Length: 173
Image (cartoon, rainbow, N blue to C red):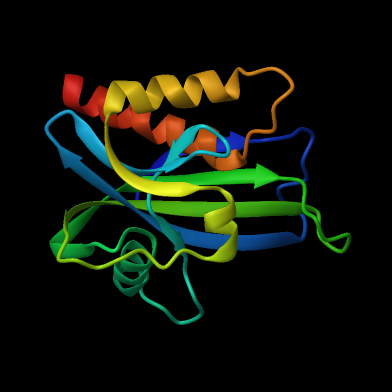
């Protein structure tokens, strides 16, 4: 899968050292100029639905499971790769040198048949709400969040802003 971006949240980082590795898949759902995302009321930012790949789980199965859990929706038909983003940061664990997270993004279609989201505790604490949003509004909201002084902004805001901007460029070409 093509590399969309590498994001270094802090510097200097020893990216060749012992790494805590996390991999996730995320769905990109478009309808005209709108994108289906999760809005965080706590952080005032948008993130793509998806989540962590469990041991021996295929990307497709992870995507189907995570979309159902986070949105109550169902991934329809085939989906195709858009690209991946690799993020680096300081690890929480003292025995590692770097935290490396890779997110794989897929173009998908979604349908809703009365399913309800089953958010995890941290997702509820982030006040995540599935919603269709104009892509320009999502970009602007995430930019404002990143540039807000004296405010904690999770890593995913920058990551998903990067992907939103790349999607917008793709459709402007």
